[in-house]
Image (cartoon, rainbow, N blue to C red; front, side, top):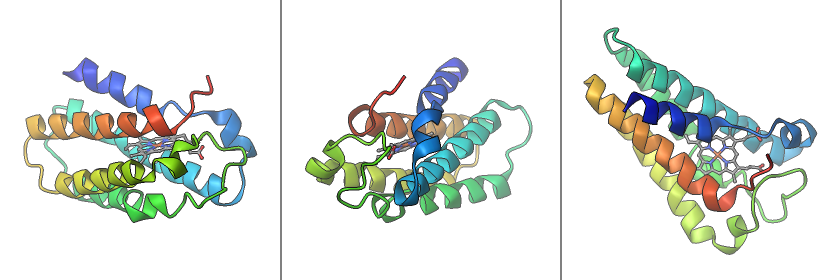
Length: 145
Ligand code: HEC
């Protein structure tokens, strides 16, 4: 389980520093937003692996951070035509129903995180969150490496 979590997180947070460095405006803004999600996932996965007592306050903060960067807060950062120096695939705009659904799902999963009370629960939530990052990236983000 622990190894699975680590692998999922690494796939999810592996960014493309190249595109990121050149992007400006809203494209840069959404990349920065994704980086925040990546950092949040990293700290959650460390928490899920740690033997220390669950830090409920940190969990609540992570739950809020994920909600701040998902749902409409995510989709509003993808206006039509915002493709310059972006790794987003055209499907964002041609298959947008599913894109919106995936962003909404992440927001709901983020919210649910605040109610986690055991380490086992946290591990399964982190795994599901990672699967959501991956599900969207597989269709909506180009591989640039
Ligand atoms: C609804 C779709 C969607 C979801 C869900 C999603 N992402 Fe992304 N992500 C994207 C797209 C599209 C890009 C490419 C954006 C661009 O280059 O314009 C991206 C890019 C990234 C990047 C690279 C940013 C950069 O600096 O270039 C990271 C890191 C990232 N996502 C992490 C995550 C993590 C972690 C999660 C889950 C907690 C997540 N994403 C969930 C669509 C999504």
